[in-house]
Amino acid sequence: MKLGYNEIMITSMYFNDINDFINLEMGVKRYRGNIERFHFNPIPLNEYSRKLFTNIETFHVYNYNDEIFNDGKIFKYIIWYKVSYSTHLKEKEQGNICKNIIYTKEDRKSYGNTIPSEIKSLGYKCFNNCDSLTSIDIPSSVSEIGCDCFYECSSLTSINIDNLQFISEKRIFMNEPVLVSIKIPDNLQIINGKNIFKKDINEFIIPSSITKLGYDCFNGCKSLKSINIPSSIIKLGSDSFYECSSLTSINIPSSIIKLGDRCFCECSSLTSINIPSSVSEIGNWCFEGCRSLTSINIPSSITSFGDGCFYKCGCEEELMKNETIPRDCFDEW
Image 1: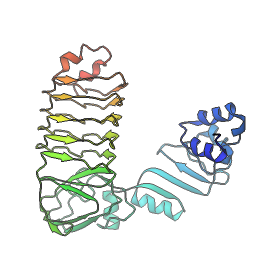
Image 2: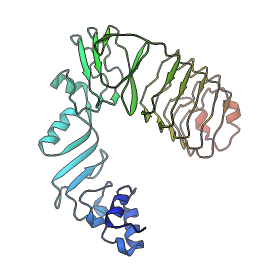
Image 3: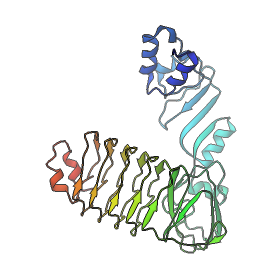
Image 4: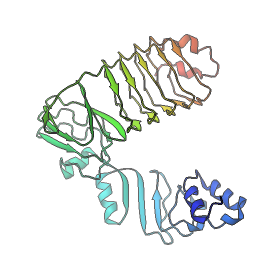
């Protein structure tokens, strides 16, 4: 089967850099002119690569520091990195689109306590000290909640949450495809119109619809003893099991490619762990303080070791014999 112009264009949308596009056109004569067919930039561009994409009409800005062009036929920008709600409104007035909108504390002060439906995340301390806030709706579009988002909301008694997953004694777990959690505000009494029924969190089964554990997801869940991670998960976010001091065992499926910063930090009851060969990166301080950990395998697939990732780990002495592990993995923060 031969790939036609349309098929190769779709395929090349997933190329990593401009060299991939150039190599395609130089290597296969019938695909010459592929770059000219694009009316948007599938990769970030610089002065050189911009000249090759001659027919761009919609310009995609993937990272905050990307070089931006307003030449030629460009009439619209699509911004993929996080921007505040106020920035989104300004861009919208100019006909541009923001894909990752965060509702910041400053936004909340300007636009109120109602979370707009296009919001993807709530910023750090977004609703902090909102003494008058009694109820709030969190739309299903929200897949990330910043630290201390509802800290000291002394009057907050009711929350409505789309895609509610689980209510533990201390946390509310929510959202698909990213599982995130927030600490239950001190005075919260009602969730989704019903009185709170707090469940034990000794064991936790993650729904197979979840693809990622968000930052801080199980942080401080000291009663959690075991957890099953489905193969739908590809990444364990930073601090996802930080200080889960009762966690004795955990399965890491072969779908996981990265263990985030402080992922298992201070999991003091964890005795053994098997890291699959799919994992290529261990985050900073990932196993720091895992004093009971006596068995851990280090597959050759791991090419990136974070700072202090094995500091004060139970098998630290044994791991230091492995010369492939950088010495700074055993250093203090």
